[in-house]
Amino acid sequence: MSAVGTTAASVPATEVDGLDAIMRRGGESLRARMARTERHLATVTERAGTPLASHANATVLAGGKRLRPLLVVLAAESAGGPPDTRDGEERLVRAAVAVELVHSATLVHDDVIDGALLRRGHPTVAAVAGREMAVATGDLLFSRAFAELARNDDAAQLCALSEASSALAEGELLQREDAYAAHVAVERYLRRCELKTAALFEAACRLGALTAVEGSPELADALGAFARRIGLAFQMLDDVLDVSGPVERTGKSRGTDLLDGTVTLPFILAREREPELAAFDLASLGRVDGVGGPREAEALCERIAATGALDEAREQALAVVADAKAALPAILPDGRSALLGLVADAVVERYR
Image (cartoon, rainbow, N blue to C red; front, side):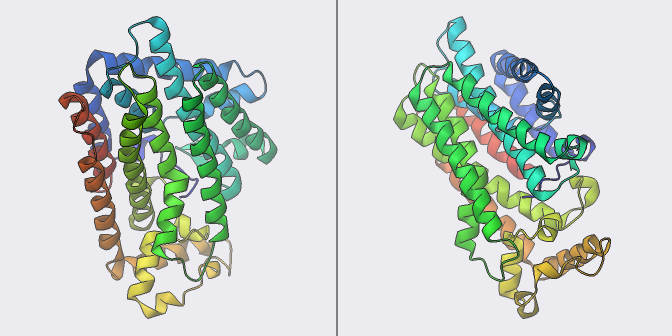
């Protein structure tokens, strides 16, 4: 759950290929809607005014997989698509933009909390303009997200995004509370992942279903349950990658999360397997000197890997993905159901 993102060059070919396959199979409507979403993201942040506009715009345009907006669009298309009007299309794009703006806001705030210098290979707002400007930029992105979604004039949509945003905050508080903790139960770790990551995935599919002509609260619940599992697996596998590395693949040093005091699934499982690790104090990493921390974190990653905990964590995450695909509603059109399944596969492929 580190705030240091990957560089563009470090994104594995399998991940890119997986998302490209979705775009190819999704057809012109999917490509056009994602392109409109990208343009609208730029427009919304450019309107913010100086000095925040430049930081907000740089944040949302720095890259990223756009998984959450993609889920919004695919969920809508799975439920008959938006109304065949200009307003219907605009409502869908606004929902997709709102989800990505909330995600971007959390990244900016995470970078402040973690003192991160890089995000997706670029200097963070905090590194460039200071903590106060970064906090204000994150706040701006949050506010613009809800301003965009409010234009859809749908209380159910606002409720979905509001609940996810509250979950994000609760998850961050839990992570801070668990920092450097001697023992964290797997159940608590999973709850933290559901709050901090999976909740926004769920909101994305809910919003897509709610903008569609054949959408319903029941379908929104079903698609949301699918996306929640995908988001949970996404975070579990991301935590595996933090330990397994390597730096040329992830764009960050191995064990960055551990160095920040974040207790993740591989460390929890390794503690159960290795008595010496059960007594290991994460706060001791880097305590001797400033440059020793990354080396010590790398050594801890090797100890975790030697216990076999990484394989166990991967298997648990893959089981969650399988559950997600099995939970896809049977009423979905075959083509769109298959594309949502491909999103699940794309999440997994990065970690093969």
